Each structure stands twice: as structure tokens, then as C-alpha cells.
Amino acid sequence: MTHPSGLLDDVIHQRVRLGIMAVLAEADEAEFTFLKEQLELTDGNLNRHLQVLEQAGYIARRRSRLRGRPRTWIRATKKGSSALVRHLATLQRLIDQAKGTP
Image (cartoon, rainbow, N blue to C red; front, side, top):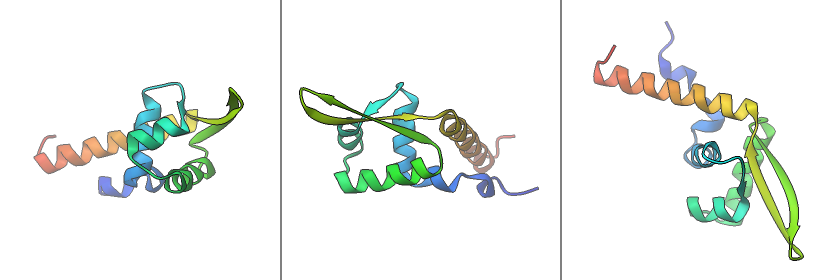
């Protein structure tokens, strides 16, 4: 049997990307600035992590304008939501195994 750590999703497992996906799991979509503030990131850092998630098909972006100002909205795709659920289940298996819980 493969150790549960081998089942972790390498795209999501990075701290910032896990945070992004966790925030998106709580809402239909989140505005770029909201994510940036919640996760205490720079524009460039957040953008880079969003690119990785987008390339994996885990998020989608929507651009709009509000009072003439551009805004970017991010949402988790079905693929991304499913990947997060699997990743969290794997983390739970690791926690249970470390605690000696069957």
C-alpha cells in the first residue's frame, strides 16, 4: 500500500495555493483583492499561484469593471473542488495515521 503522503496533490499542497482553494471553498467566487488581503500576499505572488491553479484547471477567472475599475473574480472549478476534497481527505488520513487512529 502506498503511504498516504504519496497521494497528496502537489498543486494544492503548497501553503498559499491550499489557502486560495480553502477560501474559494467557502464562497462561489472571490475577488482578487480579497484573496490578496486574506492571505497577506503581493499582487505578483498571488498572480503566480493563481496561474499554477489555473493551468491545472482548478480555478477560473472572470474579469469585470466596477465604476470603471478592473476587477478579477476567481472561482474554483468542479475539478478544483474535487481535488481539494481529495487532498483534505488525504491530509486527514495522515493525521489519523500519525495519531494511531484507524
